[in-house]
Amino acid sequence: MLCFTACGSSKEAVEYDEASMEQVTEFLIEYCSNADDAMMEQWSDMSEFNMNLQLTQAGLPIEPESFVSAMDAWKAAVKECGNYVSHGDYTYEASGKEVKVSTEAEFKDRDAMITFIFDDRLYLDSMTVDAEYTTGEILEKAGLNTVLGMGTVFVVLIFISLIISLFRFIPAIENAFKKKPAAEVKKESIPAADAAVPEVQGSETDDTELIAVISAAIAAAEGTSTDGFIVRSIRRRPSNKWNS
Picture 1 (tube, helix red, strand yellow):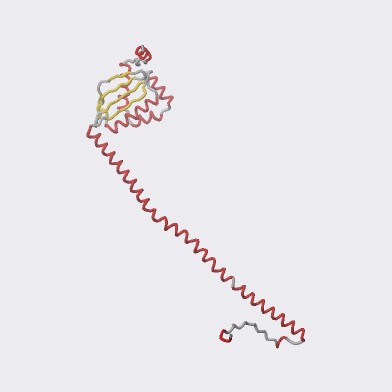
Picture 2 (tube, one colour; picture 1 turned 180 degrees about the horizontal axis):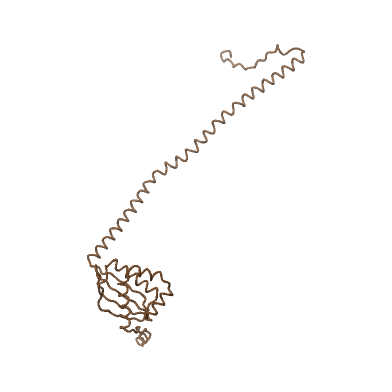
């Protein structure tokens, strides 16, 4: 019962015609292998409407975006594998959502696997060209990636060590900033001490004027002149311990 339900609910594989699909794949391989850079650039600069019109008139079930992507993939494959030489027979693999068509291709420098993916409407969804590397080449690339990764880690560790080594200069810089304001306060306090000197002079001037006024008052009371007055300051004599 459960098995019957599961089988009944599974989606059937997409139906396709091998001859029709082979016609599309052959066109793509033939066109991409003969197209130069100027022709590919012309397709890239073309508007989506004009590109769609030409593909429809040619009877190709290809969307403009998928066609440009296929040409870019082929261009990258030529740089990696060399110029195209030939390809073998196609293999077809259908599922409930897509049909995959693949073939072994020979290029000048190395072989590659060309894979075409068609959606459930049998429109081209993507084309990929995967270069085939030997075991030695794969190990060489893996070793190179490991060396690059370890080198990057060591560079980062050295950089972090340099930053940590600079931490010892932070206290010295902090103390330098603390001493600078103290020196400025000391320089500002020196003019304040000099400014107190005129106040003492001003006090002595006021005492002289007061003595002159008192002398003039005494002279006026006695009817005499102030020329004969001699003003002496009174000073307290320190006590003599020997006379006590």
